[in-house]
Amino acid sequence: MLRVAILSAWHVHANGYAQEFANYPDVTLTAMWDDNPDRGAAFAEKWNIPYEHNLDALLARKDVDAVCINAATNIHREVLVKAAKAEKHIFTEKVLAATNAEARRIREAVLASGIKFCISYPHRCMPQNLYAKKIMDEGLLGDITLMRVRNAHNGTSKNWLPAHFYDIVSCCGGAMMDLGAHPMYLVRWLMGKPKTMQSTFTNVYGKPVEENAVCVMAYDNGAIAISETSFVSERGSPFSLELYGTEGTLMVGSNQAFLSTTKETAYEGKVEEYPEALPGPIPMFIAGVTKDEPIIFDIEEAVALTEMMDAAYSSHKQGKKVLL
Image 1 (cartoon, helix red, strand yellow):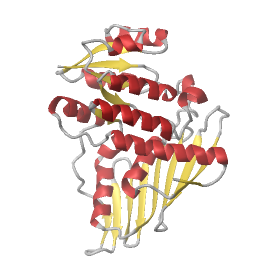
Image 2 (tube, helix red, strand yellow):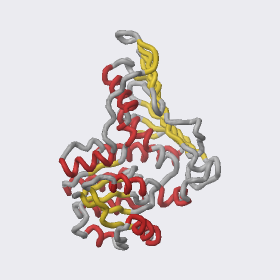
Image 3 (cartoon, rainbow, N blue to C red):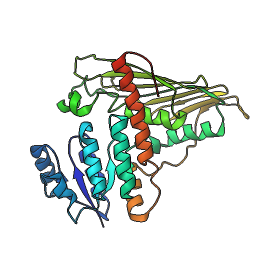
Image 4 (cartoon, rainbow, N blue to C red):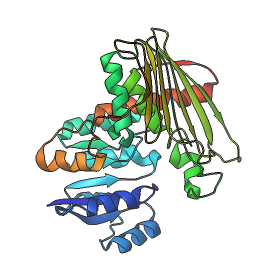
């Protein structure tokens, strides 16, 4: 039996993660901590688990093998480092941390502890995105010259995001830091580490954090990657991923993909076969802890995303292109 504690209900995915863990027959939720006592107590009551007001006391409990971290971004370093030092396996919501310095400190603690670690990168489990990786690796698009990926919703324009998602201190950013993490880790996975980053962030509804954001990245070989996100896009702006190469083009939507390639046997049309979806981040984490199976969304992948975010916000603050 894997015994999991929930560390904070700050993030909007906290209930969803708790439900996913609770759905497994060999996993049980055993405790809850939150730096907001009212929020933590309400969450604990809902899930019928004890609320612990002291993080150190929770991490000392013998009935906690692993933790699911949904804490505010600005306290990630403190919470993750303590969990690692307590030798609790860690599943965490993205991002790992807002800055490279914090991410390196977390990595140091995780590696020293020998625990299992997983960060939530669900878009890397999806068949259409796995197909994009496959045909890139096979060279069907030739040399990639441009990648564009967009992930957006109407959380601000329809006023359904919680008010604390606009707190610049706890969030360390807005749309890019939260929803924009998905395009960023996809860019890093498919295109690698860019040479430069340039950000444009805007406010449409006047929130304290950016509500609309684009980052443009350049590579040594001349390729460009564009990462887009928004809290002010309606449902007519679904997830999309585009790859343009010297031998073809791939257009990926939420549930389908279209390929055009001149490489080898020329083809143009809807893609009919995809790789099998990977287990989601939580199933991957559970299998990693209980069966010692691989966890591909490891601490190095988590640090790589923070490197992208650190550069994105540095560019925004400085108003210029920055080097990675």
